[in-house]
Amino acid sequence: MRHNPAFDGLAVLVVDDQKIIHDMLSHLLLKVGFKEVDSAYSGSKALKALDAKRYDLILCDIMMEDLDGIGFVQTLRQPNNLRYDIVKSRTPVILMSGSTDPEHLRAAKEIGVQGYIVKPFDPASIYDRLVKLFGG
Image (tube, rainbow, N blue to C red):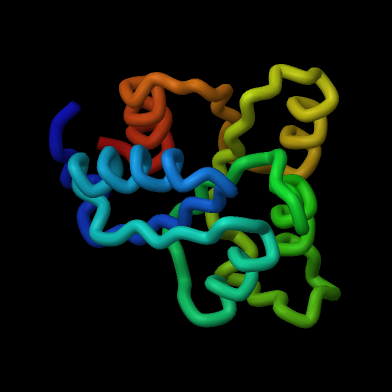
């Protein structure tokens, strides 16, 4: 994978309860040109991160304690939420999961995410998904 100018200047929030996932994705995303990669270890911490900052992309695990990925995206997109911000609510989200449970896939489609990646994932498949999302 190579640096892609389509990613220059973009900020990503990685939401996952496993540090190894944050480390791997941070390394990959910075290598291909993203400006910064922030981490949140639960859905509720991700909402707090969004209170303070705008992101160009959110990569979010589905299965987490506290607030799972589906609940996080539903809260993010819900207009009657106290935290609702129209710009932030439209942030592209790609969900990640170790599960191929059809219910998770259906729920992801219903909440309008921009993709679903099954763990363990190949960095090249993530790169390809990001190129499709941001062009380049």
